[in-house]
Length: 517
Image 1 (cartoon, one colour):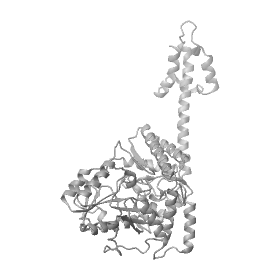
Image 2 (tube, helix red, strand yellow):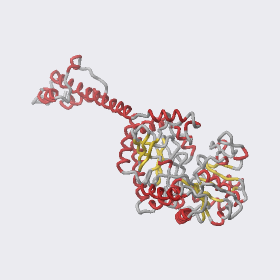
Image 3 (cartoon, helix red, strand yellow):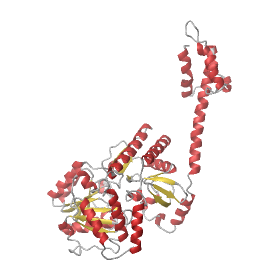
Image 4 (cartoon, helix red, strand yellow):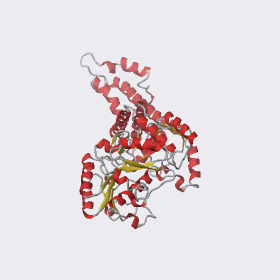
């Protein structure tokens, strides 16, 4: 046997699980120990003969045995270390208080929550109960700290509990928390929205994204004097009856309600098309008098699904051709993927826009706006009625104003784009290196991925994702202090408060988890 051949035996045998050097091998020293290294250096087996470079196989056996046993011992130590690390992680991550509070909540509120996705139904386990948030981090009632990529589902774009925003809110609270009357703050925020969003010439403030979409729906029907609207499978526009339409392609045009309690009449005027598919849209426009085509310009409620620019441009052309209005629901994308929203990012201007989340800086808010001639149909300027006791709330206006001031500062969106690209790139690379089917992407501070080969261009594609694997991944990331949306079908969000170190820590955790699931 050649010297090189002898040296190759040990790792090959260990990696194949072959230890056949005799019972005495069990007592050989580890290859990492001093006696073992000395034996390998000084034995005739290591030196070989002076004439042919061959090795005395009998002399080689003890050295090879030592190498085999040492490598096996090293592998055992590595496994023990990984097992110990997992046990330490499980010991450190305690959620006793969260579980206790949630158990009580289930007797007080339906499902124990005020909004369904918070219950962790799609990922398993009890939800985490928050105690406080600050910057890029969330802290639960058990004292665990998390890097947060939910950001209260999008509003926390400059970071949680920003000091400047809090100071402005404190000043405003001394003046009053609710007026139910006009205030200067409404004018200030309205001007900021109108200056930023290409489609908006007038705006009406509401208290939530759902309320904004309800007002928008009534508005487009009143303006066009048509009842039928087109939405897209997998796009969410709040829980108003008309929008809760089943997304399955087989019943897409039948208007079947997606929730008990929604009468068929409420959804009869709602048709569904396939996202990123212009032919499906034109087929419906040809056969129906349509008031509006309504969509998330970047889908965030089926996971992260971006449009093609040709799709958005095509919708603009088709709606103009058939006399329908084009509506961008920018409750999620507004001021997040660009200061002027998705319409500024893609260069496609709709007729009406709904907004929320970011424009309230973390307080309850919504808004809809559009061309002046359309918005003047809204009462009291016009006959279409919509009202709200807390609409234009001074606290929400204040938080929105301060948040948008921060977003106007140079480098804000460049930072979001840089860290989010690094985050999603690192997650995708780590998953693929571990042998998982994975696809995803990002735009500015919004991202998402699916456990499938992809590409994902519509809701039907998104349903091919391995949601069981996502649930396991989600839980193990949670145990490592990474808080992500508890559903495969929700986008993730970064903020100006997230740092390079936060992103590096998240990618490192992802690598560990991908190796385990």
